[in-house]
Amino acid sequence: MLLRITQFGEPILKQKGEPVTVFDDGLKKLAADMLEAMYEADGIGLAAQQIDKAIQLFVMDLQVREREVDFQYTLDGRTPPLDLIMPLAMVNPEVEAFGEEQPYDEGCLSFPGVRGNVIRPSQVRVRYQDLDGQSHTLECDGIFARVILHENDHLQGVLFIERMHPDTLRGQESKLKKLKRASRDFLKRRR
Image (cartoon, rainbow, N blue to C red; front, side):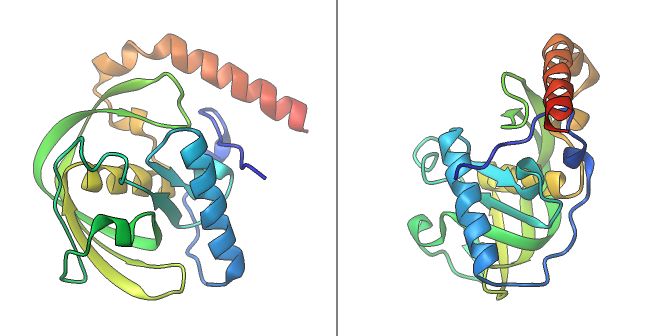
């Protein structure tokens, strides 16, 4: 069953995720279902809050972007081929951002049709667990770092529109109001 992606205005998007403590087949199934929903929506990252779960989990897959953008990474001190680590699920990530602040035109699957420049640090170091509970350290830059920062924000209940410059955000107000109305109507029907 394809998971529904939550939309702007749904309270779950503002909830901080609880740490994951059980690493079982249910977690692996959830991550696989999240990837399916992400691919169906033509995304490159999806956080648990975006499928109505307030836990510390996100998935990503940059294989479709590998030839379009330049980024570097090391996983546990090595640089394995991207197809060996993608798709990637990060559980309980602890993110340290550093490097030059750079703008990028971001979008979000929970905000269809909304895009805008968001300034973020260019590099991250993230300690996380995989779906088996094994710990890893990943260092990366470019779009790889940006996706991690964007999805980790979701896990903290922070939305990318909160990081937009106020002038950019003002240009998105009508789209945001429509999304919020649609979410309110959806939540009323669901009750």
